[in-house]
Structures are given as structure tokens and as C-alpha cells.
Figure (tube, rainbow, N blue to C red):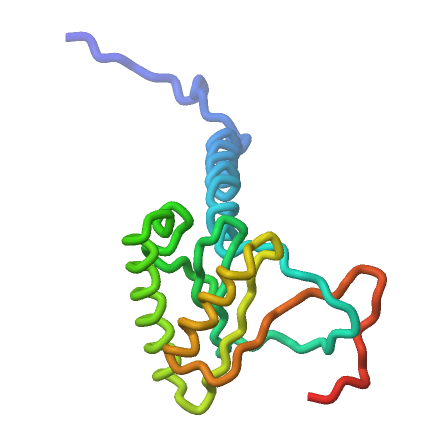
Length: 165
């Protein structure tokens, strides 16, 4: 019976760090973040109307904001409202369903903070005015006391500091 012998001085042990697995993991993470980041930021996006002599006000987290993007999709507090995309409201039945869902969500939102029934409307500047008026009518039915249209400062103009709140 022959026994295999191994010489310890002939070991293939390498003293350097192998960075290939680390680079592979970093590349995979980079690709994941590149794919996920636009999906996270894909919420409500609209080009708001511009105005001059506006009073700058910081946005608060507890405000109720109704957004309407260029295609006519509705968002409540930056979250898409199910059943209220542009393709959903193309038919009369879909529009009626969207109205019912929007009325219900706005009513719940105003009941959650009964002292502050202010609705801030952020609508794309390319929308038809009738769409915005219809949304404001639904907000009134839901209990909104004050409706505020949100605009952006016109480039090249300064905000007005003399405007009283």
C-alpha cells in the first residue's frame, strides 16, 4: 500500500487578496441601483404653471396635495390613485369610477385632519382647465374649504416679499 506524501514547501497558497468577487458584487449593486432609482423617483411629475411676484412658502409634509400630470393621471400626496390614470378615465364608466375613488380618498384625507381642510392642487400647465375645475369640484364635495393652486416662480423674476399671508 502506497501512501501519497505532500511536501509542505510546495503549497500553492497565495498571500494576495483576491478582489474579483468584491468587484463583481459592487457591479451587481451598481446595476441594481441604476435600475431601481428611476422607478423610485417616478411618482408625480408635472410642469407647473409659472407666475411672477409669488410668495415663497416651504412645503410641509402634512399638507394634502392633489396632483394631475400631463396625461391626466391623478395623484394624492405623490401616490398614484388607482383607477385614475389617463387610460382609465377615457371612457365615461372609467371617469365615473375615478370620480368615486377620488371623492372617497379626499373625504378620508380631510377626515383624518378636520381642522385643516386645505387642498393644494399641482396640475401640469398643458392640462385643459376643465380637468382642473372638475377636480376642484370633487374636492369641494369631499369637504375642502380652501383650494390653492401651486405654481412656480417665473425665471428671471424675484419673489415678492411684500405679499401678506
